[in-house]
Structures are given as C-alpha cells and as structure tokens.
Image (cartoon, rainbow, N blue to C red; front, side, top):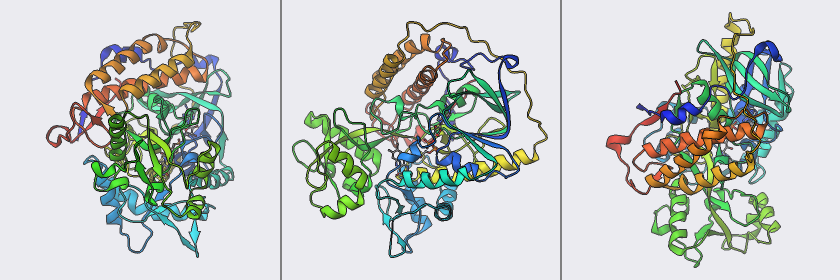
Length: 544
Ligand SMILES: Cc1cc2nc3c(=O)[nH]c(=O)nc-3n(C[C@H](O)[C@H](O)[C@H](O)COP(=O)(O)OP(=O)(O)OC[C@H]3O[C@@H](n4cnc5c(N)ncnc54)[C@H](O)[C@@H]3O)c2cc1C
C-alpha cells in the first residue's frame, strides 16, 4: 500500500524544475536512440540488452571506474549451493525487509540470480573458486552460504573490470565519461533526454527516444559514509525535479562496520568478516551483541548498527571494535586482502589488533518508484539499481542483494527501453523546452563549507537513531540553506551536486519525520515500536 506524502509548500517552492537555463536555439544538441545515465553495474548491464541497431550513449559523471559498484566488497547473493533453495533466499529477503518487500519482485529477482551470475562469468568475471566450484560466503541475515565473491573482498572491482571491458566492445554503445547530467528533459509528460555538461563545457541537450536512469546512491548526504564521492544522489534529485514518483526516501541503510581512524577514508569492513567469525567488542573488551540479538554478529545490518550506536552511548566511546585474532591468520589475510592492506597502512594488524569501527551511511533503499519492468511514473523514463525503489528491499536491504538487483533490473530496463525504441514512431527532434533561471552570481557562497554543513547536520540528526525534534532541526537547517542555494544559477558540478544534496536531504528528513514508528533501517527512538496497524505502507511523493 502507498500513502502520498504532502510536502511542505515552502520548500517545494524552492525546488526549480531545471537547475540551468534551457534555450534550445542557443545550445548544442545530440541525438540518440537510448540514453543511459550512469555507468555502474545497473547501467552497463542495461547497455548489453540494447539492440545493436540502436545508437546508445552511457554517461558517467566521473571516470567509468568511479561508482558504488566498483567498491562493492562482499559479493552477489545467489542460490548456488545444492542444499540451498530459492524459497530460503526469498524468505531471508522478506524477513530483512520488515513487511514492506513486494513478494513478486523478491521472487523474480531471486529466481533470476543464477542466470545473471552465470552470464557475468561468460563475460569474463573470475569469481573466487576452489577445485572448479564457486566458493560461497555467508553474510548477516542469510540462512545459507550463498554470497559469490571475487578477489577475496573486492567483488565490485572484478565484476566491473569484466563489464567495462565487455561494454567497450559493443559497437553501438558510446561511453561519455566526465559528463554530468544536470536534469532530465520532459515534454508533454514524456521524458525525451537530458541536459548535460560534458567535461565542464556549457550545458548541451541530448535528445533520446528512451532514457534509463541508473545513477546509484546518495551516501554523500551524510558525513560518515562508505560511498565514493560521486554518490551525491543526483539521480534522486533529478527524478524528483522531473516529476517522477519517489518512494521510501526515509530508508537509508547504515553499514555497521566502517573503519574509524581519524584521517583515514571511511573504508567499509565487509560483513563477510563477521560471516567468517569476527566478534564485535566494545571499548572495555566486552562482546556485546548477545545483549541485543540472539543472532549475535550475524543479525541483520540495521540491528547491528543500532546495537553498536547504543553500546557506544553506554560506554561513552566514539567506536567499537572488530576482533579476528581467534581466527586462523593465514586464512584471514588471504580471504580479506584489501582490508588487510588498509589496516596495515594505519599500523593495524587485522589478525592481531582490535579494529576500530562504527556505522556509516551505506545504501539508499528509497528512490524513483519502478514497476517489474523498471518503468518509472514518467513515460520514456526507465530506472534501475540504487536510484530506484523497486520493492525488493522493503524497509531494509539484505546484504549482497543490491548488485543482484542492479543486474536483474539493468537487464529488464535494457530490454524494455530497447523494445520501445525499436517500435517508436517518435523521431528524435528538438522539442520546445525552455527554462530561465535567474542568473544570481553565487559570489559569496562557499560550496565546500555548505556541503560539509549539510552532511554534518544529516549525520547528527537523520542518522542511525532519529527523533522528531532532531528531524525538525535538520529540516529547518537544510531548508534555510536551500533558500539561497537552490535559487542560484551554478555552472559547476560542485554547485549542482550541492543543490542535489540539499534536495535529497529535504526529502529524506521529511519522509523520516512522517514515519512515526521504527521499521527496518528507520529507527525512531521516540516511536521505538513497529506499528503494523498504521504504518505497514510505503510513503510516496511526486512534485507537481
Ligand atoms: C563500499 C561499498 C561496498 C558494497 N558492497 C556490496 C556488496 O558486497 N554487495 C552488494 O550487493 N552491494 C554492495 N554495495 C552496494 C552496491 O555496490 C550498490 O548498491 C550498487 O553497486 C549500485 O549500482 P548502480 O549501478 O545502481 O550505481 P553505481 O554503481 O553507483 O553507479 C552510478 C553511476 O551513475 C553515475 N552518475 C551519478 N550521478 C550522475 C550524474 N549526475 N551524471 C552522470 N552520471 C552520474 C556515476 O558516475 C556512476 O557511473 C556496496 C556499496 C559500497 C559503497
């Protein structure tokens, strides 16, 4: 069930339809059949489904290598072990999702998983294997060994290496790197391409018969995050401005174990470490998870994150610790070479020392609502991957289900967009779209400073533990910042990213304030219980 959320007219009035002035007669144009915005796993998987007769462009804001997909560590969930069953994977996903998963979607994704994994191997991905059999890992919330991984703890790197190499061989697909999508173009309720800035050039218009949005997540909204710098929620903001239905924007998953060393990048310590037997201890050396959940360190992520935050409060410490010294050292080093290297660079020995960790924003569950084929509410606009709300994750994502979602929905939107573009009678042409943004010169705006403020406010007030007064505070602060930042006419990626971060923050805080219960990754300390009677529903919103 969906409930439409009425947004505050004051902040909605600040969100302009387009971030830049659009005057087609003064701009460069490019025409294509299919436009794919985002070159992570979902976007590249989509590209493989496009009919070779159709001209396709994949655009990425940075280098193709920079995406959440490339940083994925743990792996891809798929029923592979003869002892495992689709029903088990379905049930584990539903259990993690807190009654909000769509069972049809879950069943479809789980059943397609082995086929999607097999094609990755066909396209050159080398998953970790022993004696010719895939090695299967286990992560929190999974009842069986079913996590397929590569390079030990660098699955995304290997999968993306193979996908990028395979995509570069597709003769109908061009890849435009360092091309920032500013907004989707819409005319008469249909999406017809995007306005982009290619390598810092003035905005140009790409006109497309079908457009696929696969821009990934928005972890950068928070000060503490596992996501790379590119994950600023551009796609969430772009879709919202274009009028797409947005759903479940309150559900941000926090990863429980992010390396916490002053001065280090916030490196994720994969769940597989706990799957292989690592303990969580607090600053006094006490193994505390039994105080919170009988599944101990293998409880779902939301439970572990919330338990860590409570234990940090109890012990008045800024972090807790992962401990692996009871595990076989050679195995640990071989299984987790990436984490071992990062720890060594900070003088820590993964096999002997306690590793300081705390939660960080990791995976955005909410996004543009899509149907089983990946259609959004805007005709001509498809979406796949972390930018969407497909119904797979409900209120909480089960570990290693998101690369899988990107593969399954990437294939679906590629198929759908390809079939529509082949049948399309629409010739790609310049349409009468125009927008005029008042050219305020942002002379006194310190973009970096405001970006840091937004991320700090969101971390403090819309983080792992939420309550009404804090959420209201976040809304007030972001609304104040938005009142002058969203009115500006920027001409840099940093400026547009800041506008997108603020737009996503406003949406997230509004949704989180509305949901007066605790469910999945959304913990309201002032409403600590699950409220099935009133809240077993999705919140949605659409900018009119
Ligand atoms: C550290 C880490 C570890 C993870 N480990 C796992 C794991 O083990 N298993 C698992 O299932 N999931 C994991 N995840 C989550 C998973 O990696 C992501 O959910 C998934 O890769 C998202 O894929 P995507 O294709 O939707 O987006 P991404 O891979 O993030 O790709 C987004 C693309 O969109 C482009 N883009 C964004 N904005 C714009 C713009 N304005 N203009 C143009 N291009 C734009 C980017 O350049 C990029 O090419 C992990 C995530 C992180 C951060």
